[in-house]
Length: 118
Image (cartoon, rainbow, N blue to C red):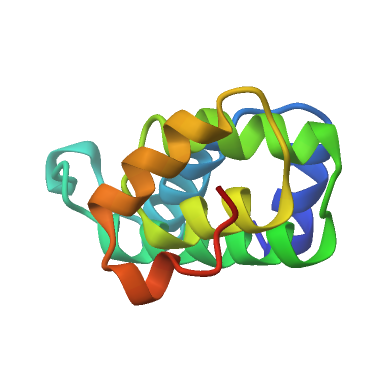
């Protein structure tokens, strides 16, 4: 799965946690790994890196799109990644923004969160 395909899947309503699973599964298949060779940590770093790139891309190019906002909002409740929080809090308005903002400011140092609106 490439970035553009992932974006299209988000725009069609696929949850980001399913995209992360699909991306990881694709990496496993591409490497020809058998189920016995796969650990919970297999391709965790690569999947996280891809999902962070996806979040950044969505925040920069789909500002205000309610489909993307909803997907990112759901994603930040599953991960503690700066890229997800930054994309969501920098580019979207949503009902639970104050709660997400509080959690983001707890998770990440002040200089990283100073540009997030209250």
